[in-house]
Image 1 (cartoon, rainbow, N blue to C red):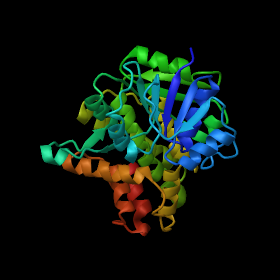
Image 2: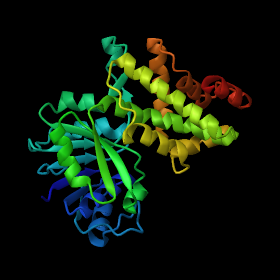
Image 3: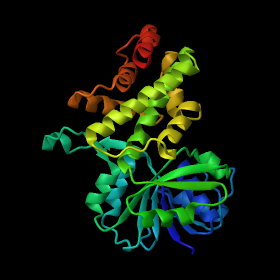
Image 4: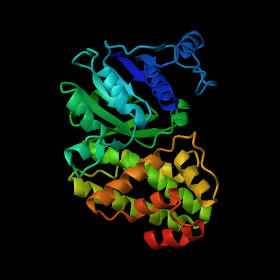
Length: 329
């Protein structure tokens, strides 16, 4: 059955998702803030900002407003814009059937934690959504999914994290085809946590690459990182699911490719290069939050804390190798 789908965000991931869903013969509406881009996409079927060399499906219509009469809403915006978009969607009267799928990975700093005297400063998008959209179905989409490879229809797997099996089956049916498969996980918060911490681990692997410490060291760092994810899950008493596309699959992808911005950041740090202030390094934001969280609750997260110190330039570049070795071995 053909579904009406709103994809919010016309960056790389939003464009790739919209094109993928349209390829599966669904009616897709791609939200973009720029009127000029709306006109260009609808006229030429090319996104002038990303993947301009690829012709988009004729099943895609670009628009500059949030369409309420849709079956699903996919949010493909940067993590630091998710709460803002949720707040914009609150007053809109979506149909009861509408399923919301958050494709932005990660966590955010809970702004109410200090005021409420709460030890947990970590905010989860799934939790925020539940509090503000009580009667709506929610899922996250997370996995080892480089947008360019989805555009190129290369083999891809992803995880749909949601509580209701029927919600998963609905999303599965509209997304799957012969090159794109999904799996289900109810461990939503663990997957959101992995979506943030994998960027921190990518910075660490980039550091190891830049310092020429070898593959063994990268493996050791990833193992240490997974241990720290487990520690956080245990402290927060949330279900774990690390053996999934959104868990280890996404960690492997982000930690093994220089296509990853965070991996490239690690290489730059190791070589003492200036880091561009114009690039959105999500791992940099995440590591400061995780290190602050660990200090607040007195949880030992040596690797995350070390990477935070390196980014803050609290450790001399001459001591990087020694300090990294001390933590991962």
